[in-house]
Length: 443
Image (tube, rainbow, N blue to C red; front, side, top):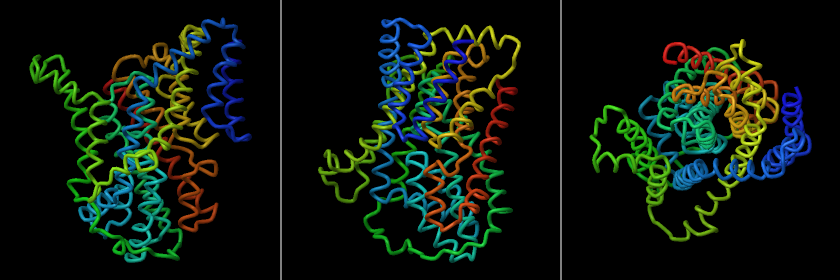
């Protein structure tokens, strides 16, 4: 009972520190982990061991993935490659299907680019299409935000899913494969929600920035823009196939080469290096500390350090014996895949940050995967996706994405709750329903 009470009390203190006192999540998680170790009677040596193993272990496998993913997204954003991708999706789907175009555009762009940045970048297109098609501006921007948040929570190489997969030991190639399936199915009710409900919100754009005014001559080609995203994903999936017991590529040097190039760190490094070729005119200052690369490092650093602090918290829980406690306490219970979902859902709703909710939940759940029946290779992937599903909703007034949507569009708080917030709630519960069905069929 002391362990259970200690975990709940520390989580409450962490949330209080982040929400009320605006303390950085890294410090709140790190100090909270040490305080938990002291309260539960762990020795000084074990606490120090947990800090070293937790921080170093997680960052050793996850830190570089987050960094290379952020570098890739930054160069796509700065060079206009992200807008090229959006325009291509628009050309494929057509301006008649405005809401579907915005939703899928936000979905694709939010895989390499942060969700908030995706919404900000594509907002001029959302405004323009709403004006040209006489559609509700609320519908176009909410379609965009829901698409962005869906892939942001479920599909690597977005930082949250990468960190979660690393902490739980889930295979990244399978995470990409199942994450895409779950997220695309989740978009179906989200799209229906936008078309049947959000479109009734009568909101017209007050200022339209025509995308034609942008200097498209400096943008990369469509093939060039897609290449840094698709090639790493292809290499990771190819390496996963090469690792099958049947050894479809043999067991010689060719297989070793594929496994090397398809290892997540190398694949994302290749993607990041390819993104350096996106500018029409390359300037070495882009790679300087004050250039685009330096900006990417600044964006990645908080996520990396929060992930490390989450790793310390998870290792502290593990070394305190919480796994054995849960094994005994949940012997006759059947929480299964719903426990990681509910923890992530509660944390996301309480403190607003998707990444913090995912990392904290993964750190809590990692030591108890076995008693939950989630310790096989595939179930680890589904557990990571369940955490992503929980972190989808509810996005409300404590989430930066909520304010980006409402402030850019001019929606009222009530309209934001009725559209963006309700949409994330629908997506979260839809995603966990799909994941649960998949665990029954494939688990």
